[in-house]
Amino acid sequence: MNKHFDVIIVGGGMVGTALACALARKGLSTALLEPRIPEPPGEQIDLRVSALSMASHYMLDALGVWANIPTQRCHPYSDMRVWDGEGAIHFDSAELGHAQLGWIAENKAVHYALWQRASTQVNITLLCPARLDTFSQASDGTLRVDLEDGERLRAQLIVGADGGGSRVRQLAGITTAGRDYDQQALVTTVRTEHPHADTAWQRFLPSGPLAFLPLADGQCAIVWSHHSEEARVLAELDDATLGQQLTDAFAGRLGEVTVTGPRGTFPLRMQYARRYVQPGMALVGDAAHIVHPLAGQGVNLGLLDVAALAQVLGQAAQRRRPLAALTTLRRYERWRRGENRLMLQAMDSIERLFGNTLPPLAWLRATGLSLTDRFTPVKRLLARQAMGLNGDLPELARPTLSRNTPM
Ligand SMILES: Cc1cc2nc3c(=O)[nH]c(=O)nc-3n(C[C@H](O)[C@H](O)[C@H](O)COP(=O)(O)OP(=O)(O)OC[C@H]3O[C@@H](n4cnc5c(N)ncnc54)[C@H](O)[C@@H]3O)c2cc1C
Image (cartoon, rainbow, N blue to C red):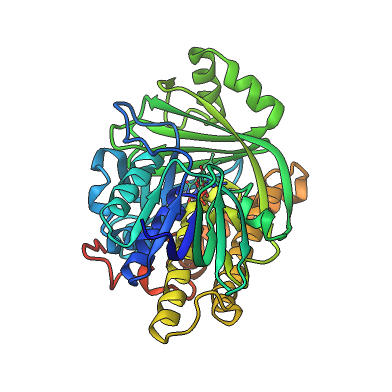
């Protein structure tokens, strides 16, 4: 096996695997390290789903991955309805000239389709199961990367796509900042009395947001962010009692709710790495930033990191510039860090505003929601942001490269 690569990617989750596919398009050789062998989707839809933006769709399509995500595991939603006790806002894809606002996709199905695609690329070496132990700079300037099983690899560049607790980030001595929300997201699958109408529904409660996300088989995926202690109590309830709690919390908007799937809870925090790059090293996805899931942006931001880094590295390779040079990597950091920070701060502000029961703030958010709903330019801007269509989009995330772009 060739043990010298252009890039070693640590972490073969959705983001790391997408990066391997994107770099393969640029003709770069990569090794992808992942400890857990990805599984194909099972008979039942898994409890982990993500709202994927239009930009993520364009990108997965351009990478040749979209067509391999089963349609029963990836459902388009055309509307989004968000409300709290007083105000409400409605986004309609038709008003924006699109057939949908985005998709609700099973993580396992997206991940497996990415992994399958990566496994067919000659310039990607999948090392799985494999786990990073440590890395260091060799005297010739290349990187020495040691795996836990004792194997040693070399590369020009190492990329940390190894999630929120990133070992690459720790070994690089990069610190993080952020906030623990003392919340857990309870996730499960439900059937509702009234049809979901291809709409992503979200109600802001003082304890945290509750989302009903439409699935292809008519069911909904639930993401209920709650104070940690109460989330643990909810997770222990029997199906009938949890169904009743969901019906009540959603004020009967979709009628009676019946819990049909298993549950899981995930601790919520906002976290950002103080730097994304240093000579020979870059961070992408959750290794660089973790965002509250209230607007379903985490993996979408990670995929935009991938598209930007692949573009920067592709240009460097074309101009025969070193991939590991700080001047190359800083272009990526400048491109993505500011945009990600803005999104993290926006989600954090929304969480604070809606989690507060003080009357002036309750008035502000109710008025804000209703005013925004009536003020088309702001509403349009917000919708395009959520669809991933604002800002300086990398070429891979633009509709032009996508081979099958429903507009
Ligand atoms: C409840 C909830 C709902 C969410 N909903 C949405 C949504 O609707 N839309 C959205 O865009 N985002 C959503 N997110 C966020 C999204 O799930 C994450 O942002 C995304 O999964 C991060 O992907 P990643 O590949 O960066 O990291 P991860 O998925 O954490 O992958 C990291 C990988 O690195 C591997 N790894 C770790 N250590 C090592 C090592 N030492 N060596 C080798 N490999 C290693 C791990 O095995 C893993 O496969 C949600 C999150 C939560 C908690």
